[in-house]
Length: 132
Image (cartoon, rainbow, N blue to C red; front, side):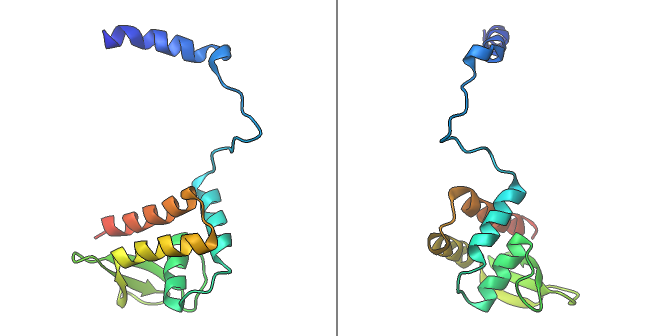
């Protein structure tokens, strides 16, 4: 019965009268790079520790520190190790993954990050965790 209904649903959705027009209050969907750039712009002026700046810079692919943190990996026990520019492997201990996520939510309030921007950062941390 579900299969028989599918063509009807598609026909209704294609009718122009069924599409809702955008209103001035609607915001267009932003690309991931637009979200990244907006997030970086908001975080650039916030005073936080050098290590946290390096970690955010790595997540956002921004060169905010010298040396630049170019890679983070998560260990099996939930800690983060980082690799700085010019190093061969991840040797710098950065802290716990859970602490990074908690700190992202904390700085988000100060920097007035929107939900897309917080989601972008948390998703990047999730990518790091998956690369074990």
